[in-house]
Amino acid sequence: MEPENVNVKYAHGPRPKQKLLDRAREIIRLKHYSIRTERAYLNWMRRYILFHHKRHPQEMGPAEIEAFLTHLAMVGNVARSTQNQAFNALLFLYREVLGISLDDAGINAMRAHKKGTLPVVLTKDEVRRVIVATTGVYQLIAKLLYGSGLRLIEGLRLRVQDVDFSLQEVSVRDGKGEKDRMTLFPEAIQTVMRDHLERVRMLHEHDLADGYGRVYLPHALARKYPNANREWRWQYVFPAHRLSQDPRSGAIQRHHIHEKAVQRAVHIAVRHTGMVKRATPHTFRHSFATHLLMAGYDIRTVQELLGHKDVATTMIYTHVLREQGFQRVKSPLNF
Image 1 (cartoon, rainbow, N blue to C red):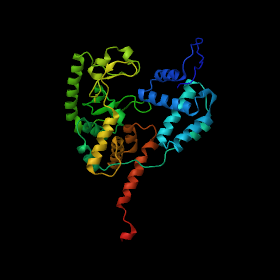
Image 2: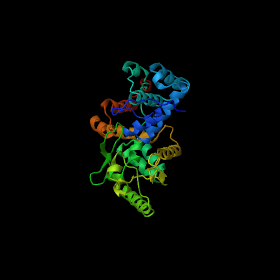
Image 3: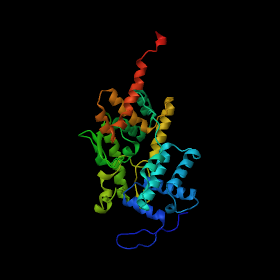
């Protein structure tokens, strides 16, 4: 149940009372957050309010936020990333929706800090075995993730116009941190990608003939270019098998393949190889970075290809290399 209505002051005079979570949803959309972020943030806001017996957030503050986050960690046993997502949702609620500033020192103390764990990285042979064991379109997706260093959601959100065969580049639009970047488009998959896109084009033309053929367009593009959502260049490289209803506009359109479908396909492939490493689609990105550094490419180049804001984030892969280097050191017991 949502809390009672809250009054918000506006520059052009008073506005009718609006439920708090409805107001939060409106602000999230004005800031062009993704539908996934919208759902996650509203869910955490709702859980926070219910946890404190439906008290209004204006009556609460850092102490109540910390109590909720502690409950998630101690009782819910959630991962640090999940706890931080809840924290960011509540920070958004107070700062953006309620206009309440929270003490930065106290806020930083509440963040769940990451452990210094190294990412799982596959050898080149292990990558090959997993890719070979992956079937259908998921094999092409796996090759692209490893060959371009993409995050899974970045690969699935690619549009036809983002793949440049002549320059052998992939454009990542509105990636993590709302940043655009360019990365590699592997020459090894160009032929299979052309064949794949030809099948996607046929599917798109079939949709158009049936009166559909539309895709979601980001931000204000749908209003600025009302017919662009039916154009070939805006179609997803990896479209879903079925049409679906957009949760915001209600339009029937073809979205991209769901993340969980790819995660499940890779999980099955890893299991079929008999591998004991806990590999996921994101492991391809870790392996991409590590293998480039092993090949002698400088860390700044790898940072740019990965889209890391800080080179310190990319440095984690040098630690992986250092750990792998220990394999060449003989124990004194062997002498």
